[in-house]
Image (cartoon, rainbow, N blue to C red; front, side, top):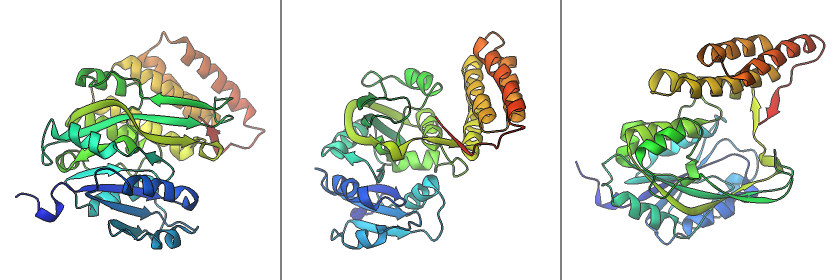
Length: 317
C-alpha cells in the first residue's frame, strides 16, 4: 500500500534531548530553516529537569511535535520513541547541541532518491564538521576537523571494511528511508554508548548506502561534552565487539584489537580480573600483538594497586 498524500515526501526529524535547553534553540532553528520545508520535527524530551519543556512551548511552528518521557532512558530509547511515531517517508536525526547547514535535507534527499524510493532500503550519510574546544580529551588547543575521511560515493566494500574498525556514522549525519527502518529496525537500547556505531553497521550491511563527502552539519565538542566511559559503557563496547564477532565476517585481528582496548578500559575502571579475561581472549585471537601483552601485564599491576584504592566510576576516552 502506498503512503498517504499527507505524508508523501515528508521527512521526520527526530531530536532527542536531555537538559540541553541552552543549546536546543540553535539545533531546532537549523532544522526548521532548511531549504526543504516538508518536515515534522519530533522533539523527544528524555525527562529533562531544566527549562526544556517551557522553551519548546514557545516554538510557534506547527511542524514541531513534542513528546516528554516520564523517565530518563537514554538517547537510544528517546530516538526509538521518535522513530515509532514518525509519519515521514524518510527519517533524519538531529542532536540537541548541533547545527545543520541550510541545504542538508535537500542534498541528502537528492542522493537518496537517486538510488531508490521511500519503500526501498536506502541510507545516506555525510561528513560533519567538529569544533573542538581546547582541553577536551587529547586536544590541547582549539581544533576543527571533518569526519569521517572517506572518498565521495565510497563503494560498499570500503564502507564495510572501515566500519569494522571504527564508527563512521553519527545520527545527525543520517537520512534513512522508511524501507531502511523496516529492514534494520531501531537502536539497541542496551547500549549506553556506541549505539550509533552499532546502528551504522546494520545500515551499511542491510541497505543501499550512499556517502556524501560534504560537511552538512556542525557539531560542538566542549569541556562538558567529554566522552566518559563508565562501567555500563564498557559493557556496551564489549557487547558490540561480540556482535561483530558473531554476526559479521570480521577479521580476527580487528576483533582482537577491539577486545584489547576494552579489556584495558575494564581494568582501569577497577575490575582488572574481568579485564584480564577479555585481554586473554584478545591474545588467543592475535597472539603476536605486543600491546595486548603489555596491557595484560599492566592489568596485573592494577589488580594489586586496587586492593588499596577505590574503583573509579568513569574514565575519559
